[in-house]
Length: 363
Image (cartoon, rainbow, N blue to C red; front, side, top):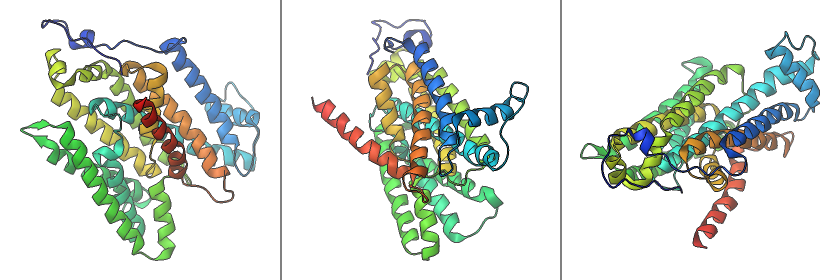
């Protein structure tokens, strides 16, 4: 990871000017990487919408999307059943996949910096497992007090409840202790996963498949109403993370070093983790539990572009969006007519990557 040199004496310079970590964004530079990933993501969105049991040419997809988004530029577009498939079924699903991937990857990058732990991911703070438990309870209870919003609201409530409990037992002497937070998060995640497994195993067979598929993650059945709130929260949180990236770089020095640079470490850590939990609760509420994205993507970006969080967070968000768009394509095409849970595919991709990191660290 990039290092920040601690000054020999205190200075009146603001933390934002004194905690910047050196960048290493490769030959393209940071702006070039952003433009490249953004362009690849846009192309991927169009191509991914056209892939599925019914294949639709990318040119037709582009005209349909252009007519819907900018009718003054694209006056005519193919109509009929293909238009319904593209605009009402696949496009919201692909967009939601990009939003979920971006949120998971951005949060992974932030948590790894906040906790100074390269293995940190949303399960560390208990949010993912809490969301899964909340959603499974609603699925298996068969009640919908809030109509179609009952499932995402229950998942979000479960994420916030689990995180609140972890946060409460992680504070020591009025301050947030990272080691206690990690241990508390692991314990709460194990407990909620055990309760979830017990509930699933003791329910009628007709409900088990739905619950299991949801806990492994998936985007089937996505509608436009599912996209708006997660998109706003993920974009807003990622932008906020970037504004705090310079301060996040200072945490590389440890609490004492960051405090010496004028950073309010405990307050910064609490805010970053709270916003991370909000993002995780939101995306898990609409996609289920998807593992390894928050762990794998920041590591890959760090290897390619360096550890400066000013670059790492936005590049991770774009890379995570790109990854999940194509993972979702695989989920709906590899086992037609059935779908593979997205979490299964990310685990297959993430486990070898994790082993590679371990071997690389030993060397």
